Amino acid sequence: MTEKLSGMNGMVPPNRHKEGVSKNASKDHKIYWTYTEEPHKSRRAAILKAHPEVAALNGYEPKTKWVVLSVVFIQLTCATLLANTNPWNWKFFFTAYFIGAFCNQNIFLAVHELTHNLAFKRAMHNRMFSLVANLPVGAPFSASFRPYHIEHHRYQGVEGMDTDLPTTLELILFDNVLGKAFFCTFQLFFYAFRPMFVRQLPLTTLHFWNILVQLSFDFLVIKYLGWRSMAYFFLSSFMAGSLHPTAGHFLSEHYNVNHTRLIQEGPGKDTPLETFSYYGPLNILVYNAGYHIEHHDFPYVPWTRIAKVRELAPEFYNNIPECKSWSGIIYQFITDSNVGMWCRVKRKQKSELSN
Image 1 (cartoon, rainbow, N blue to C red):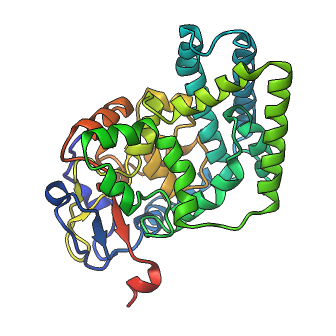
Image 2: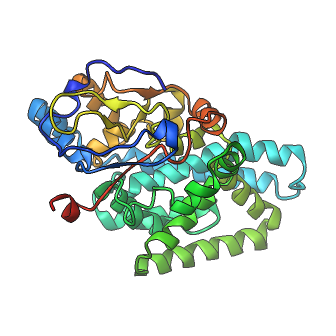
């Protein structure tokens, strides 16, 4: 990330928040607790007031379904071609890393687009198509991802509600180089299983269909292509969430690795930033997922128009520190002793903030 600390006044109006309470995270490795409100709602209001034309960017993108189907086809083709290849063969490994992982990261973020109803006009069509997008991942996740992700937007940073936050146990176990390397290698499992330990949500009919469709697909793959093809899907998913360039987006989105703070006057000053964007070339492979501040500000703008948000309201984005490299942030996260899982912002629920 770069340290562009000047000119932050355009980010949030100075009288927006209550006074925050902080600890120096870089010295005592403690999560920053704030008593300010979640920042993106107020930013959205300020941006729309200054640039009402941004609202016209909301809507769905019909092109998404064709990209998803193309990626699913690529993965099916690779799985078919590797059906008789030993998983320990370098060709199998390299294909999974250099093709499969990019494809399945694309799938992960396609499901993210579908979660926000950004591929079809009707919500149900987005839900059903997410089951198709899910297929090359190997395990059903799309139905579970949606409710947790919606809560991540609604309750960003709220302990016990935002399951994107690391747990206390994770903070204790992984506060060293080896621990952080382990987390980055297996972070897909943490994102998959952490929600079930933090906040269990009820199963729905969509969960049932997700499981049924996925298991039926897996059965057909194993029956007609063999277990090696199924192993290819799982290995692609694992690598997509491991030490892979595109996996850097998990860290770049909300980890404040430079301990940068919002510079402004009045209540809420000196509040740590908690959402960051990446504007590099890998965005073309993952539905512009790097535009993460813009996405939290306007979650119903699809990937083909999200860059336009920054273009129309530059004063709200140009001076915010940005992640320059997803590979670089993984390396920094693991090796820098002043960076860790504690580089996050937590807050109380809104009802507690008002007390």
